[in-house]
Length: 147
Image (cartoon, rainbow, N blue to C red):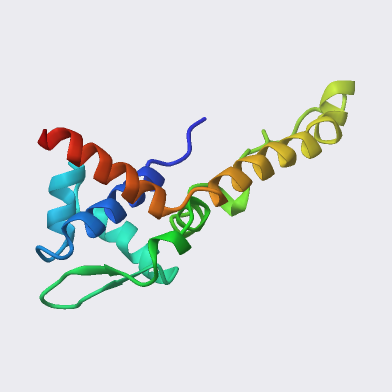
């Protein structure tokens, strides 16, 4: 099981907006060049981020800006915005376990609370990381590359 790549693409998009936004218009074509992903997919992610109130996208001439300080946007905000999991549930439970089997009959009782604890731990960790952390690391690597 993997979380959708929309999450890492969205973080990549924010890093590009922050890094290049003062130099040029950050458009879906520009972002597609950096991510090496089809611009249609980038536009879908931009739409999701805009819908969550995390970015603004200029119509016509293009360009994308972040709506609030990077320290106020957590990985959890991005994760929720780009719908990394279906119906807010990290784990998809297999359909119709056999009620004739004692394990199948009880598997939800056995696993539900444990899977919820795992998802809650993931969400707590995602909430603890912000785009300011990404900015700091991006700047560090760009400085190292320029040496």
